[in-house]
Image (cartoon, rainbow, N blue to C red; front, top):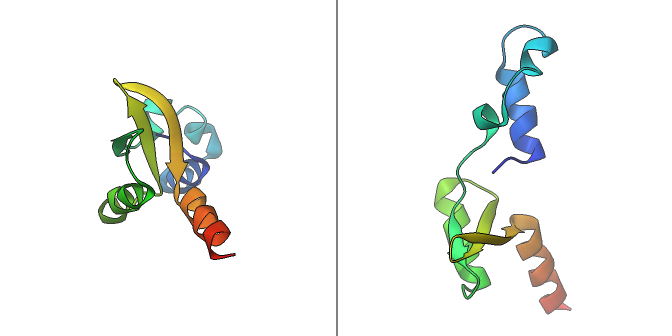
Length: 83
């Protein structure tokens, strides 16, 4: 998975000019993300993110990507429930 923060972090690690950073491939930038089935609970998503220090999980069904749940999504859900 590749998100904006990954790109910013990686660009800061590339020695030299931004022109070198522009030649990086997506494969060099991507990071693994945990996968959960669409039947998983929100709490399972939070638990899957925590030990890995990641902020998203991939929602899959039969190895097909259905969507992405982010930490922001979970916080919004909690905020709605607290009203």
